[in-house]
Amino acid sequence: MAEFERKMPFALEAEQSVLGSILIDPEKFSEITDVLTANDFYVPEHAEIFNSMQELFIKSKDIDIVTLIDMLVSRGIYDKDNAAKYVRVIAETVPTSANLGDYAKIVKDKSTLRKLIDVAGEIIDDAYASHGEVRDIVEKAEASVFAVSQDKETRGCVKLSDAILQTYARLDSIVKNGDGATGAPTGYSALDNVLVGMGPGDLILIGARPGMGKTSFAMNIATNVAKNPTMHGPVCIFSLEMSAEQLASRLLSSEAMIESKKIRNGQMSQDEWGALALKTSELSMCNILIDDTPGITVTGMKGKLRRLREKPSLIVVDYLQLMQGERHSDNRVLEVGDISRGLKLLAKELGAPIICCAQLSRGPESRTDKRPMLSDLRDSGAIEQDADVVIFLYRNEYYKADPAKQSEAECIFSKNRHGEVGTVKLGWIGMYTKFIELDSHREDDGHH
Picture 1 (cartoon, helix red, strand yellow):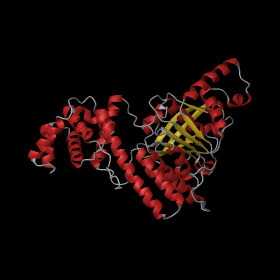
Picture 2 (picture 1 turned 90 degrees about the vertical axis):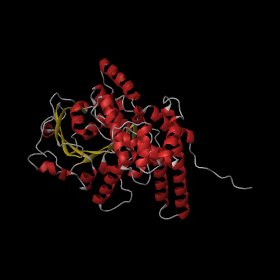
Picture 3 (picture 1 turned 180 degrees about the vertical axis):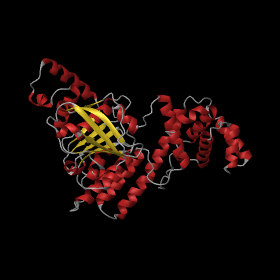
Picture 4 (picture 1 turned 90 degrees about the horizontal axis):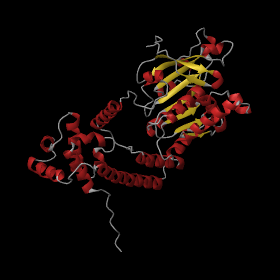
């Protein structure tokens, strides 16, 4: 019996309908730039027509039959007669652009299936070849399938025009939403003014001496992101120091403004019990996932995060020096360097921001001005290199009589790949392990 010849999945009518819909209503072109690229079209001529439309869009020219024919001819895709014939065929394919989103989804789905077929072939070849460690082969296979599921190209270059188009679409979204932040907001307006949101793929390092509140700071931000209605994916917390129950207790203390000691021993007033019940209900509705595996590796994190149904809104790691390297080394500096690079690559791969807490050396203790600096990062200078943003926490009251009382905390931006450095001040309520907004605005600390 002859083997049935399998054909690559594609939908000719859907591809024509997408292009025809744009000709009917060119304003809708910006709506599909987040969904489709030219590479998603199976028919090469359709990809070229989409590229021509994209070029017209970027140049702010009208997209219509005449301008499109002219663009196709000038780019050498068709001669004038053939261009005119096929563009008119496409224009007559659909009577209305109302279903453009549905047509685009069909084209995208077929494109995803083709990518999956290609990736599956590579996985089969790698498995047959059996080169290297089995663990590495499985890791590569998992990464390839994940890249397809998250709509990321596993190989090849991105055209500048595609990148520009995505930037246009992002700016258009910002203008329409009236929001200057492009990433996940921290919930602290003074911080967001400097950060402009925590962007997809950002590695944000929070460094501090023990007891300064770096875990609390990261947890406060994580809770703010989880409660934000514009954030849809889960907030994933990898807690290497505290158990999930300890972390939950701390979150309840911060949100309900009840001393953590009271939550541990249960000695609360009627009002406090009411506040706790309310915040318990609110936090239970938040999409927060906690993993308290001690000594987890970056690969271990990858595996767990890839199995999520949704892309995370934020990932928090508490804290860096408690993580294990992939291969144990006597040189801890190199090991921590590998971990920080792995976290940056993970953030980029997942397209989600990662907040990573880091312990600082005892350097600040020996100085008159105990504010941390980049040289205080413990174990590795690579951490500074890999991070997009480095924020140091400093509370002057910590070195005085009562570190638990309400005081002022400085968030010192020592590195900010997206903007300026300087100091943002927040309030700190030690008994509730909570950072709060202050009315004061950002102050410049002179580090430029």
